[in-house]
Structures are given as structure tokens and as C-alpha cells.
Length: 324
Image (tube, rainbow, N blue to C red; front, top):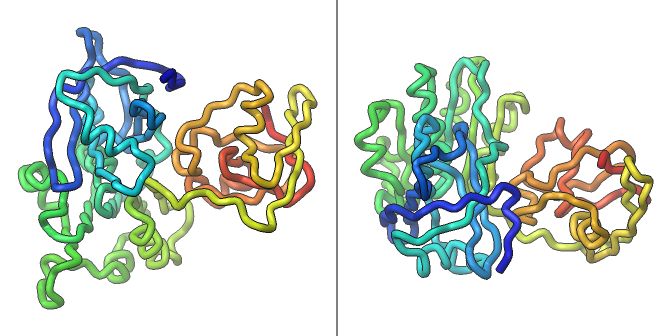
């Protein structure tokens, strides 16, 4: 299967480590002595997963490391097959095709402090963030939420980290009196000092709970990344609309069950796509006219004033003019 990874790179799977019953880490190293492309904390790479297409996984090792990438992958049995393929088919020594790192979830340089909230497998980008913040001497707190200690990935690394005193844990199975294993979200967010930036990553329910608890926070101080999202479904009321390419004046019709991205690709317009769920931000494009109906999970309220995710957005107006 030929997969467009935009910046293809071959790497070897050097080590696979079972972290929990559901999560394994994969250490990827270059095939030659040439260093891997640099990355910043919060970045992810695309991985070609056989017949299951391209999937995105966050890098969890320190950004200062140039001879390896480390991924944490949870096996999602009801998912689209990519994580099952990695868990069942990939062995140490195998060669994978990946993209260069991209970052839609970067740390804010001028924050006075950083509050990192990780739910389940959402811990992976937070590990890279914590490592980078520690190396830079920044103020941070990492809060890890998991169903139980047995479901906590990278537990040994967390216990041995030089910044282990900056970690708090919340386990769903903890008793109500076990205060060392429970976190009150409302109290935690209320205690944050001015200038603190909040970062969250995890499953849908966790993200919804944190966003609700942080509803009073300034939008520019809240950063989030979804690892997956509910399938982008076309609604019964969806109607056809037109998309126009500003540079050429070309106009195409997007049917009620089409996506803008697929229509453009079918007509030879060169755009980049990846997750097709409105999560990764690969297909985000500026628009000049029209009123989009946003159905993504990656754009902030401010970004939605000028950008649109082509894989899932619709249009409330008859025509949407893209800055392409």
C-alpha cells in the first residue's frame, strides 16, 4: 500500500516495551548514523500502519534526544485498526515509514507556570513536555489520571524522574479517603497562579470534564489535544455548498455526504490530510469568505475566525472561499 506521509522517513523499531496490558511503547531509531529530525515537546508523527493507513502518535521522549523517537500506543480494539496492527504485527527490528514531527500542541514560551493534565494514554505528549520544562528550569505540575495504578503507563519512568516531586496522581478506583490518589479538578484549577497555562490530553470524557472545570480560564491560556474523536458524521440537515479556490477562481460543489477535503483531492487540488477526524490539524486551511460550520477538535475559538479543517467542516453559507 502506498501511503503519503508528506515527509517520508524510514526508521527501525529498536525496542518494544509493554507498559500496561493495553499500552506499549515503541522506540524508533534511524537506519543510519544521521540524526532524526528535531522536535519540540507536544509534537507527533504520522506512522504508516500497513493496510490501516496513517495514524498519529505523540512523541514522549525528551526533545533534546536526536537518535530516537519514543511513542506510547494504546491498543484500541474498537478503533480503526492501526493500534492493533502495531501491537500484533510489529516486532523489534522491523522498519516503519513515518513523517517528520509536527506540533499543534506546543508549550507557550511566556507562561509563568505550566499545568499538565493527562488522562490515560494522553500522558505521552505530557512526558515530553515535563522533560523539556525540567531541562529549561520552568515551573510545572504534571497530573496523571488513570483508572488504577495498573493502568498507568510509564509508571517506572515517572517514579524515577528527577522531577517526580512535580507529579500528582488520580486513580478512579481510589477510595474516597485516599487523598493521595485523588485530585479535585475544581480546586486544582482554582489554585493555579496567574499566568499559568493549562494543557490537557486524553479521552473524550476526560477532556469534557477538564474543559468544564476550566470554563472560566482565559481561552488563550488553555491548550488541548485529542488523541481520537467521535466519528465525524454527516447530519440529516447537511446541504450541498460550493468551495472556491481564491488563487484560481475554481469552484467545486461539496455534496451533503462529501467532505471538502475529498472533493478537492478528487479534483486535483494538492492538500495535505491525515487523521480525517478533525484532530491532528494537518488539513487546516485559511478561508477568506463564507461562514464555516466547524466540526473539528483542533482549532481554538480565535483560530476558527480565519481557519477551517477541511476534513470535517461544512458551510453555513452557499459558498466558502479558501485561501489556496
